[in-house]
Amino acid sequence: MRHAIKKSIPIHALRLGDRTVEEVRLLEEGKLQIAPDGTYRVFSLEVRNGKGEIAQPGDYVKFSSDGWPYPNSKAYFEANHHPLGDGWYQQIPRPLPTWTVEDGIIPEIVFLQQSKGLSFHPETPEAYFSAPLWGTTLTAAKDAVILFYNVHRDEDGRILDIEFNFIAKYEFDLTYDWLD
Image (cartoon, rainbow, N blue to C red; front, side, top):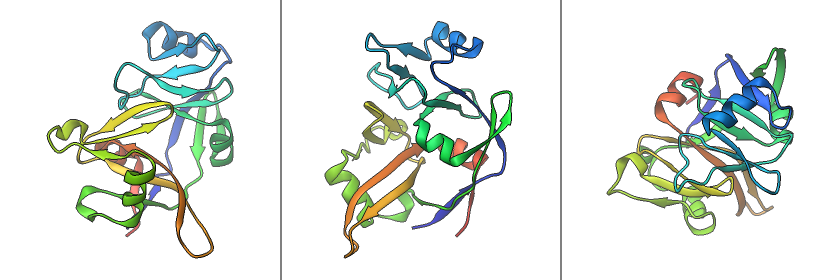
């Protein structure tokens, strides 16, 4: 398993529920929706089936290099980003384990398949991966990178849980550096 680290570049983000001009614009564009229960639906590039990723008021939305919104929980965002001002933040660089198709099947991928609903779709390279994430089904192209934010193991090293997400190859290349 290789590792990568976020490049030291500022990222743009907003906190959901602050009703900023930008949040209103995203609502008008349909990239955000507010559900009847007050939660948000975030429509990122990977969203399929017309159901947005679920986020709570107070969570954050970061923007990819091409303007797609991506939710981050309040706890994760505030623990991993420093504010720079005016909606700009610096992500604290931490090495993250990664996986690509070229890496072959590893125990973490088997766990994701068996316990987290990760599936492969060789017949559709543009939606090769799919998994239930953020309350909806997300897909990613065959060249995407899977980032492992946390791999929780018991004292014997058995995997108990994995927090992960897909990142498009072009976005990965712009925003991450390989460490090994």
